[in-house]
Image 1 (cartoon, each protein chain N blue to C red):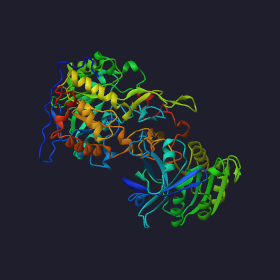
Image 2 (image 1 turned 135 degrees about the vertical axis):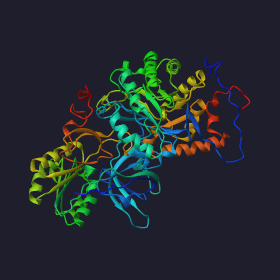
Image 3 (image 1 turned 45 degrees about the vertical axis):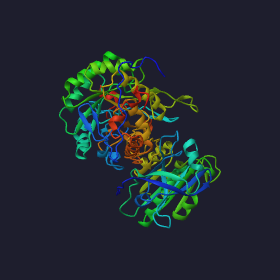
Image 4 (image 1 turned 45 degrees about the horizontal axis):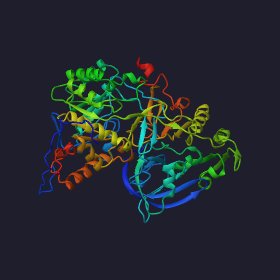
Length: 333
Length: 289
């Protein structure tokens, strides 16, 4: 530990108040939007909520983060698209989806009708595509926030990953912010596959991002030792699951230390309430449950229940008090 | 043809019995709420490895048989080969071991409204879902004939079940250790001729389903094929189990075999293109630009 993190910018959080009543205030804020609790789905791991509604009420979550939507329908990549790895998985889906028209006609209205708050993830191949997506979503009922996926690793050209370049990331964020209604926060989803995530985070915030989501999957690869070729048809894929949780904690920690007032949606390997708590202590004000859903469709509501217990066991009366608590400089608590 | 809908549930199941069947493992699970809803062709997705496992993804198994009555409540039976850390873990489980089960999943085999002559084709343990189907078809007055194939006698599953339920049973093995040496498609046309087959139901490896679909297409007979694509979730959210399927308008789409399958009409699946995204697929890169 140690290093140059945040000598001046660490927010000192007072020790949590111990309340006599077993009432816990789980509410959290994504910039201007208040959510009833901090547990969300993760983009690409919950489709648009319908499938999970068979297992729990998606309105019980803080929000549903939808699979990244693009302007046009998209077939995605060839199979195999998936490889299980130790405590993780690689995916190479390639943003398969119905396109924004079908999303606005079917998916977002469904979420709204079911009382869910939707954080809509958007992805594009150019600044203009992101801007057009934001424009199409403007005023849509049920839209709580935008998550701008500038970091999907499953694109043919690594140079097109906007989140790997501060200037490109800022250009997308500023175009999306300009086309989005003022009351709808814009979160930029960052990649940990960069030299300095704080620099990218800062560029996004300077360009108008109201918050940051981190982390996207890490670029990875696996070989089939029988065929002695890549397992994935797309050769490389995005690594997710508990295997990447320490990377997520590190990124959230660094960015929260540098930008303590910027809300962070944390994701990366959360499969229990304690995992969610760890990301919150590092600085996340909300936490997305992603890959865990594949193994346990009820994971988001289980994580919420376990998080409530974990917060209570540590004397946090409000979930918000746990955000960034690990950064406190007061050594007596 | 009719289809029934079901709503999957996630239950804390428990192993009731385990036994070896040739090269395979047979497991019966107490899984209340699943057996009652299951239709032939549907599957279950099991969590493997225990609560803190490094194996994150569910394993999908077609349902061999269900029993919705009895002292244990609803039970679900599966048959599988142990060939990886997940299925090896499952093979080690003993009676009373807890297993988290999600099901029933997927679309079942479409059933004829009228009595027909149905020929059921299974490859290896892929034959598992065909026996419940055979019972259902027979209870509706249909004729059932079986064609079962495998690499060897050890890998043949359900020959005795088949003999008990079917008008005729044809068996093929690659090594000739039982039945005729060869593939199911070496005898399928002949069986169909003799049985006057109206519909073929098939489950097994992709190459077998492709070959069965071709035989059926040549004879103008409907094939209902249950595919076994690798899946991460089984419930429609991960998008890994897709394959190119033509819809009724002839448009090819990459569809999820877990929710839109696992049963497809043989002529709808572009078998030769499985593992690719054909250029004329809806939303394919070539079509988009």
